[in-house]
Image 1 (cartoon, one colour):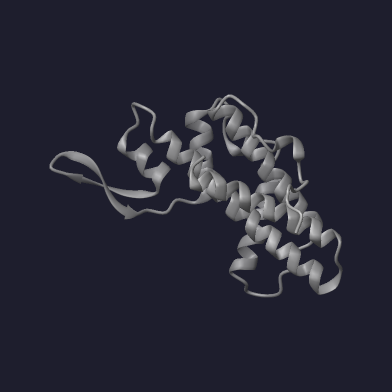
Image 2: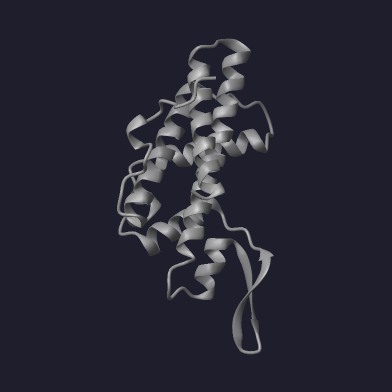
Length: 179
């Protein structure tokens, strides 16, 4: 298993464990664990998408724009040919996810996925926490919905790209960690 695969699994397990810890806590502890679970969950999703995108770049027949979106690298036109220039070109997470679902699976667009509204709400909450403009309250219910949506999203991606379920699907929000 590649390092990014191990990291993505580890981050999701940590997020789930922090949600479990939030259930065991109250007050400031609960809030801190919810914040940690939300942030680690979104990191886990992005790490999984990056790992899947890296593997997809190995497929034959991809064009420069495909590789640019999958690897988040800039492209240019040099001497009449498109080239990847190795410079960072960021795409929104939702756009990359939509791109993978639309081009490498038969699952269609995000808006058609039953888990999408919870994932979108979770990402919006994450953005409010990372870029605060006022008080942000992160609660266990919202984090649980987001983490469930992440697991469902990953299961959809795995079924579409790899033709198998996401390995941790059956554990749902139960962490394999015991700290």
